[in-house]
Image (cartoon, rainbow, N blue to C red; front, side, top):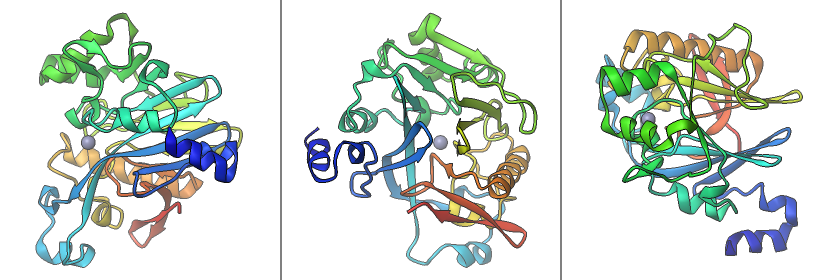
Length: 284
Ligand SMILES: [Zn+2]
């Protein structure tokens, strides 16, 4: 709050909501009526060992000898009269970050999940109590089924139980099919592979768009130029690779900025085609 007041004094009210600080792990991108705020939950040394089929020669081509960083991020979306969270990380930093941005957990009306891995649902509940008590929780029915019935994850079971009648299960359309908004201006799109129900979110306001790509990539340095390389975390590695290429091409061809849950700060930027692969141009 103190920092918000300080920024407000310096740059005026508007600047408060366009806050960006690498030190604080917060980066704001405006798309029409939406403020899309990337929040770093955790940053630690990356591990290229999670990449499947990437030998040392390939890795040394893309990863500096000094190593690289891995980040876990969530997004806060501010719209007129609404506060939306996309994923909740491990549940460690998200609460301080949203408060720093002037939003209390009780003011979050919507939580959108890209999927139900532990680093995305960790902030949903404690001891069965919802930590965003006034929010509806949106998750694709395929991920909910997978993590509560097929490969049962107690965190997923507890999250679904905690939100009770506020859980909204949906079946997102494929890329290229007609969009179906789940809340005004925000449409889920099926991006299966990483998990059976992995979902990306297209945000639209007028002519402005933004795509939250969830866990489409885990090691951006390698997977932008080589989208065919999947990670051990991808449940269906070949589907994940096909989906990765499909969405990176979509973002590049349509000049839609993207934001990812495991990209390093600012974790927001543009995708460009580059030879047989892609390159990432950070927004700042
Ligand atoms: Zn993840």
